[in-house]
Image (cartoon, rainbow, N blue to C red):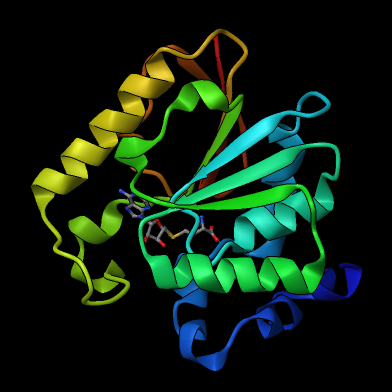
Length: 192
Ligand SMILES: C[S@@+](CC[C@H](N)C(=O)[O-])C[C@H]1O[C@@H](n2cnc3c(N)ncnc32)[C@H](O)[C@@H]1O
């Protein structure tokens, strides 16, 4: 796996050219994935959910950086799940799993900690639309944020959340910021 982690450019060779146009805007850079994974893998065998996992870059990199944790990605676009699974097979990683589905159908009780890279923003900003395969709306943006907020709210104290480029609409007040990068784009939260 280490050869894929040498650089973002190298990692992107896991994917066909057709999907790489999404990479710079929609996929987590490796240095961010490393920091996020280190924070989220707080205990051995922790189960971490990536909310909107795209082509799986965060999950795959995080799983390689933290082999004692399990990373799960839920993604609504089936073709991205296929790219993620193909990349997983190429890397041989055993601690990462991809689920095709909408976040509204996921039970957060099955996971300990969460990663969120601004997954719903495509609903309110034309520049962030990944493709034309889905309907976008402000209503969906609010509904998805509400869904994540409610489920995060029910999680026990000690639950960790890492956000990247978040509007923070999805974060209940019980989550306290415990760190961030200097530019404030990556933030670490723990429920108290
Ligand atoms: C910004 S990308 C992040 C990809 C991945 N987390 C990474 O960092 O490499 C957000 C992804 O969330 C997915 N997404 C958006 N809304 C979703 C929903 N309601 N349920 C599941 N996936 C969703 C999008 O299709 C997109 O692939």
